[in-house]
Length: 130
Image (cartoon, rainbow, N blue to C red; front, side, top):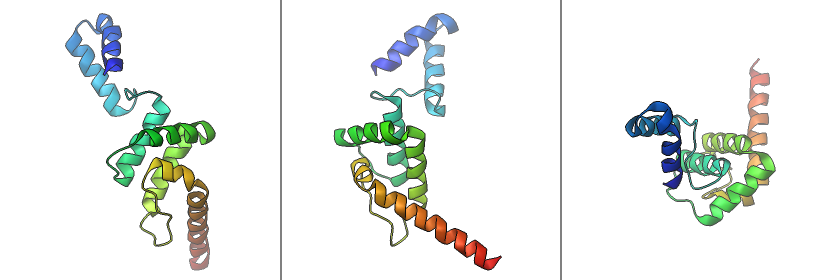
């Protein structure tokens, strides 16, 4: 990874040794404070969230382009939040089937509609029992 090597070179004079710099970079990357992915950190966060929460093993180039478009249109935090929310509701029989970030982009309106309907039905259940 070229980005990691550049970061290590930048931090080494501050911390005093290459080994310490590597440990600092690894820790920052693991904790989410630093993204050392392929390119745009927003795209990396969307793709990694999708892969982790929905269990997909690979992301194609088209998925990265779709993540970039979603990030520009809705913001990376919103998209990752929707992915996590969808993952928690994905076992519902009426949930749209999403297998890739490209499909998420294509079915964005359906996913949002499904989430809104589920939230509304949960609110109605709470009101009826109260």
